[in-house]
Amino acid sequence: MRNLFFILISFLLISSGNLFAQSKQIVVVIDAGHGGKDVGHETTIAGHQDEKHLNLKMAKFLGGYIEKYMTNVKVIYTRTDDSFVSLDNRVDKANNSKADYFLSIHCNGNDSKAVRGTESHVHSMSAAKSVTLARQIENQFSSRAGRHSRGVKDQSDLQHSLQVLKFTQMTSVLVECGFITNEKEANYLNSTYGQEIIASAIFRAFRDFVKKQHPDISFTKSETTTSSTNGSSTTNANSSENLTYAIQIASSKEWVDTDDARWKSLGMTITRVQLNTTSAYKYIYTVGNYANKLEANAALPDIQKKGFKDAIVVKR
Ligand SMILES: [Zn+2]
Image (tube, rainbow, N blue to C red; front, side):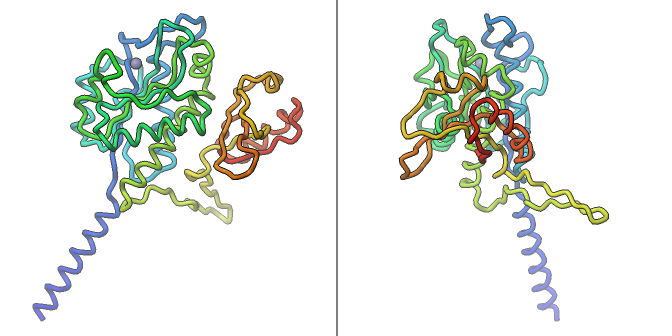
């Protein structure tokens, strides 16, 4: 009898241990670069914002996507407003919260206005996980977000080593989302549209990466988060797969510049997506970034009226 009791107790302990494992979560620190008296790169373009403001907006979009579309991820921000946070404090916050991931969001600047593109920085090329995550972010930028990727860089590429990467103890990537000194890129980074595309590219890379890293944790939000009241039900259709819809306006066999004259009548930012296909049509061109199909459908007639009558709604 006593033995049976012990077996029961052990069984209960093991079960609760399993329950515990299921509720395991990861922690990501999102670091909006600069803030307060530290403005980062200053803009010289009228109506544009300095780097610190753009970083904060994209950091919040990114954190918002993670919270909305993933479970079991705790998001911690190093700042959520325009306050000054020292580099030491950022590092301490990440280390003290035992974060698994650290994503620092920045925009670049250069004396030459021609320089443009995204970069993802790691402290060292020997930090394998950070390098992999950084590569995936750059892949998302170039293949899905239509950005010009300058690739993954480590401290040897920089005049200064990035303190936030040097002293954080977890997988850490510092993302330079583009150059605010390049007028075209600056326009993009200053638009809500551009900020959302950048943030969703980083989000997809992060989501795919952590899913692989932690096969024991479920990050997928239930498709049917249904709350049913007197017969009507609201379904959370915004699962991670539905993050963005876009409107496809054309496809092509050859690479066409997103600045091409043929798109001008739309007055919208064109995103070129390279398809992984054996078909002759290797590229599609999309506009817009919509949270759901309804929103995309609502925007469609206007685009068709502007000369793209075959435009269709697609998943990004
Ligand atoms: Zn910066």
